[in-house]
Length: 455
Image (cartoon, rainbow, N blue to C red; front, side, top):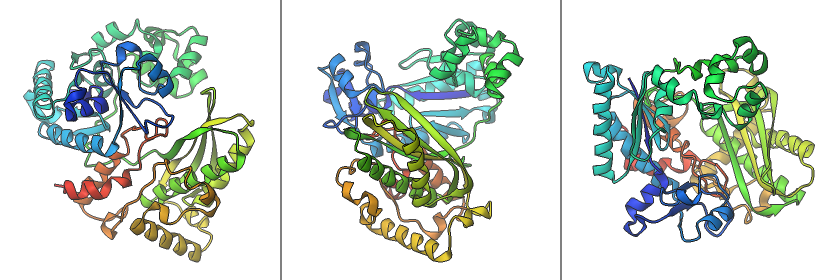
């Protein structure tokens, strides 16, 4: 049996638990309250007014002007998430943090204590009770034979719900629902399905497989299996770790801008931070993506595959700038972002070294990284972004000192567990002014390592 523990309105609930005067009141967690941005989280008291995560702050204030607006603290939420992780690990070692407020638990090792729906329900109720008593927080839990069903079951009854589903009940509940209710189907995919006459999850399950493969490639049949409630994805225990699929930074600008020099300076600073994260974790990227959101909230993403993997800010910036100049039409920009994907570990391909240009440049980059590790990100910045350093102060930056034992591929199991906890920090989804932007996990490492030595 698989459990998915989903913390209810996590960021807002943590604030209410820490600040008693907020309990029972509409609470909206956001980035800088004096800047633009989006809602990071809304308490259940705010949701009847239509406030949702991802909503522009201006709209949230219109819908719920009496709410308490709290400037969130991602460090606080990650630490609370790690405390909850300790509870999960008392149940089973097979725990996979899915995000800062969700985790999968595989009960297969528990034998008779977790191999039936009744036994799994008993475990789930015990978890809910401990979370409420020890942390004052609510959790909704889904139970199913696989990760897909457990995940979708967790959202059926909230807050503090507990939903048990097998494949048959899954189909009974979700087949009548819109196809976008299926985990993995977004707005654009739903629109594409609708053009084929597929509007519900049941329609997708019954659709001809050749039709799905023709229009969606290998993803089509995969989603059809999901529509039947079938999923073979294993729970990956947190201590085994999973390499990230992408790394990126994006930022909501202080005000809409069509200043090309300012926007390219922003791109350079973002490219620099993406490069820092890549090098810090021992990766290089073969695909780079530019994200733009204009003043009408229209969003475009454009990406480019590279012949060799890169990890330096100059290469990343040059590609991002080329995409920017090709696709920007001069309209005011609200948000801009750069991300890297198709990641590979350094040393896996000789071509990575081709982009280093020469040993001298590589040594210089390493020296600059060491300076920033010791003195902070602002100690060294690309010259092209220096004129906008103050304006870009809200971009989430950060770095931590890295010892030889922390280097990728080195160290013992204890270091691996600590690194996995750092990856959890990077999944917080917290919006610190950058819409739907996660904080740099390296910002959190020094404090977390000191506070929570790995077992």
